[in-house]
Length: 119
Image 1 (cartoon, rainbow, N blue to C red):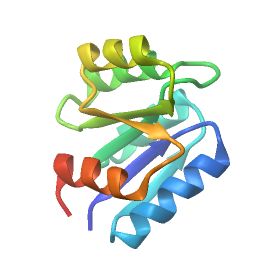
Image 2 (image 1 turned 180 degrees about the vertical axis):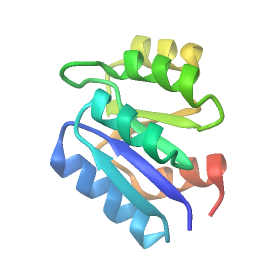
Image 3 (image 1 turned 135 degrees about the vertical axis):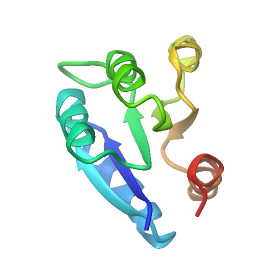
C-alpha cells in the first residue's frame, strides 16, 4: 500500500485530504508544519508528499527546497487556496510535481495523485 505524507497546518484540510486518499486505498501520515513533515519524511520516506504552500515557521516553498535536496525521488504536490498563481509557478520551478487547489475536488485529487504514484 502506498503512503502519502500530508503536511498542512489546517487540521480540517488534513482530514479532508486523508479521507479522500483512504477511500482510494492509500495510507496517510500527517504533519502540521514543514519541519515536522521533513522529520517524518526523513525517518520513513513516503511515496508522495502533499505540501501546503502557506504555513507558519516554514512556508511550503522552503520545505519543498529541503525535500528536493534530501528526497529528490519523492514527488511533492503543492496545495493551497486559489489566488496564488505566482507562488504556484515558483513551486513548479523549484520542483513540485503538481498543484491542487483547496477546497479539494475529490476527482482532481485522485487524478493528480494517481498520475504521480499510481493506485
